[in-house]
Length: 154
Image (cartoon, rainbow, N blue to C red; front, top):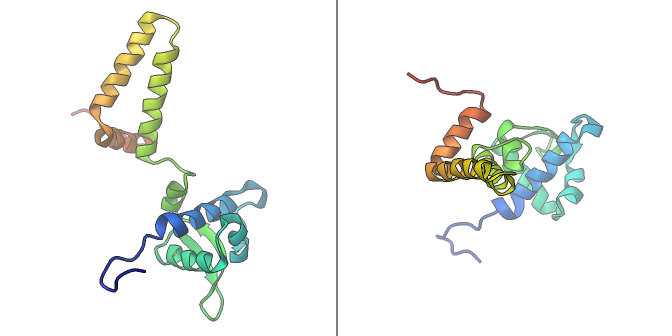
């Protein structure tokens, strides 16, 4: 039980994110062409109780992560779409941090699997330099690349 003056328990990782991922899978599924989904379809897809799915859907709609249709009582009955940020949070679209991690992983794999010592050293040098740049600057670089904008030299 939470103290009246204390912070509320986190529901992002335990409720909202699993529901968002279930909705993203349904909305993005090609066999249905992104057709609207009844909220009831999200319950089995999320593995959570209906009350949790309803609460999560309300929170996700209120923050703009999902587009929802409601009935006359204001209850969400259908999910019609998700935002770009929801796609990134659900893992459908890249994030700068995720792409930086993928780049570091690829550099390590290429260094480990290089066919010659010279190539291995080159890949390792690049991997070491990327690691030295750090994740903050690396994420900024990947943000420019993922977003299609590469700053020009002055």
